[in-house]
Image 1: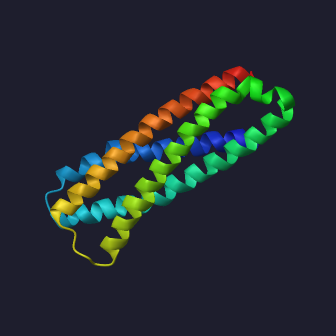
Image 2: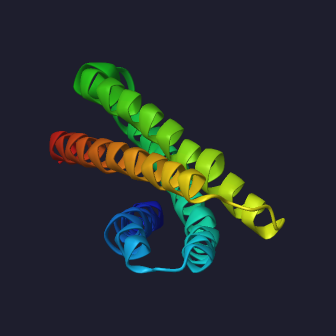
Length: 160
């Protein structure tokens, strides 16, 4: 039961971070006129977002794996027949979701924050490229998360 609640709480935190980046931080950047302030705002936002995003994702993955182990023990030889196809499809989407999440947080966000903290100059073109990459990755994450949630609900309905 604790795994289920922890899974749901981490899912809410994860989706809240992703949607917050999409609806709050990224749309606020064009409203800032000064380029340096825009760079600092994005770096500060990503410095908060990155560990929250990846930490919540890690908790989701571990609690999901623990729940899956319990489910396998409960259904034994009927597990594959009952959940195999839907679970396989969900895990495929989860795998791609994890790749995009890590790419966004570590490949784009963390690199940008480290660069800004080191004092390296960020040109307006480079900033726009980072923002475009963040938006693309975020759109993919939102889409994959919606599909994964839908598949998770289908699995939960099969279990009950």
